[in-house]
Image 1 (tube, rainbow, N blue to C red):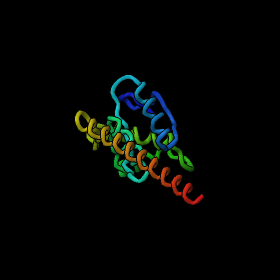
Image 2: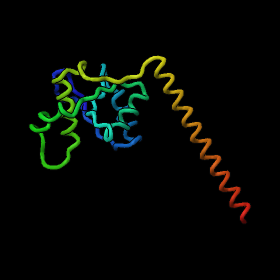
Image 3: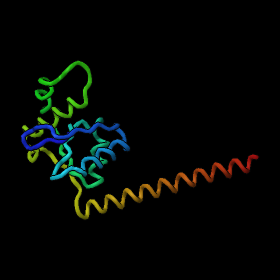
Image 4: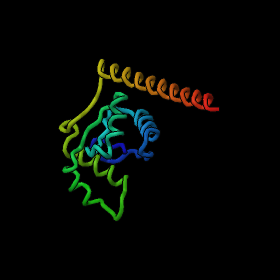
Length: 145
């Protein structure tokens, strides 16, 4: 969701909670005008993958402590799980507390370049390992035939 400084929703996007969906959200977010930050409720086992994905791409991630969400959810909660309602409550709580006062994570400059190089290296090592394992199995299949 995107909000103006007064907390009025101006845009909304839903995507799958996996790498492909994260990419869609990032692409959508970057098409918007102005400065922004991604506000994520700080529940690491739930939001950790999204947080790492965004930080690895140079985005600013603001962590909203769950204790600040108790009051925000009560006024808008309906029966069952609702991601749009949760997103709205998170955004409003962040605006109420002041985004600049919350913990923020961001890689910039040299740190981002180092992280991007490390990610590239990890992908190269993963690819090499996969190819070596495939070759070993093919050699094993040939020797036992």
